[in-house]
Amino acid sequence: MALIDAPATYEEAMSSEYAENWKQAMQEEMQSLIANNTWELKTAPSGTNIIPTKWVYAIKRDANGDITRFKARLVAKGFKQKEGIDFDEVFAPVSKHSTLRALLAKVAADNLELRQLDVTTAFLQGDINEEVFVQQPQGFEQGKGLTCHLNRALYGLRQAPRAWYQRLHSELDSIGFKESSADPSLYIKIYKTHIVYVLVYVDDILIAGNKEAVDYVSACLSSAFKVRDLGDVHLFLGMTITRDRKNRMLMLGQERMITSLLTKYGQESARPNATPLNSSITLCRTEGEPLDTDKYPYSNVIGSLMYLSVCTRPDISQAVGALARYMTAPTTVHWKAAISVLRYLAGTADYGIMFGNSTDNLKINGYCDADFAGDIDTRRSTTGYIFTLNGGAISWSSRRQQTVAVSTAEAEYMAAAYAVKEALWLRKLAADLQLDTATTVIYGDNQAAIKLLKNPISSLRSKHIDVIYHFAREHLISKEIEFVYISTDVMIADVLTKAVPKAKHLICMKGMGMHKLI
Image 1 (tube, rainbow, N blue to C red):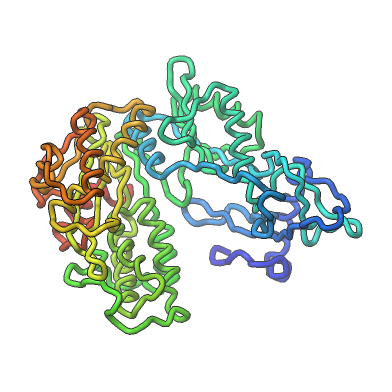
Image 2: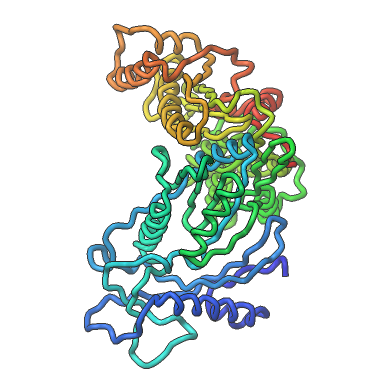
């Protein structure tokens, strides 16, 4: 059973050996829809845009990969909706991964309770204002010529995420929670004398605080919505969270996803690589033969690697970012490089970010670097920065700069300006999390760039450089940000700008707080 895949269609579900499991899952979904008064069966007026529906199936597993439940969801085909008729506003915020990691660093340091709630059929809780008709669910049709006139939002509708967010926001606001100024999906409340945090990612909710406060919030939300209290969090958005509360340590990893990815592409027994990319290889558009993407699913591999690099693996961010530039026209060389990243993961699948045992007193520190003209195709430089808290990385970036720099110093202080922007946002988040908000230090390894940032310049030749310079310098003058020189040998952001040798790669991993999972 552990190896089964979810069916793609209703017909496939009903013809599978687990048809009874899927039938029960659909019945449970229908019970939720009926209990929430999601629709009324009506004859749609002539000319009405009736939106198709479909069943979507999923197999829920625990942190060990064991099946916990079969799940069926009735989904509207929202791409058939017409703007201004079937929907209007659609925006709904979700928490940033940086916010999650910063909160986890705080949880580890203060040894807070961390509980996970899952809202059952969350999108059905949201009210919609538009007149929307959808087809009856396949296998559960009633009457002749009747359609479902929606009273509540349905999964797949364009406005469903916004409707749910507004409902949840209203409920949290009613019990005294306020939005974070940095991330509207992080809510904060003082319960008695303690602060409690609620982090929302669609229908997955984390509550952090002391036990009394966490119990209070859980009870409030349980009275307002049908929720499953999953207890201490172990798996969140595909990331495993492991804690050693005695030593105030917390680790964030994706070992199960990596193992699955390696198996999918036949690399589970491959000889591991020491680094994601060989530092002697330079990627460009013209190297190699055009890749047969029907046989070699380059985009799928890079997409999966990108999710890893965003969540828990800053050590592969540079490699994935470089390979993503060739998604439209990959070559055999690019495919070989993508497999190289997989083979690196084969040797480090059990690595993740560790928060704890830090001496920084919950102070955010940054590292900023640039690889001058490193992109062969455009001769643009690559910016890399990383911010750490409580010993682990909470925010990082590896991206090609938008314009061509004409010197190393110019590339470095353009990179510094991007790091300043992120630092300013993190300072707002730090204030909400009650972290140290003294001057944020960003370390750089280019003395010329640091001097340019700290001292007036009278001969800047480019408007965009002038704007960036004044932006960064303004925040240095106010002492919100400080740039400090360190040697290139200990610059951990180096791994975010280019492929580096094994010895330097290991230094960078240690500096980012990457260790074997506990």
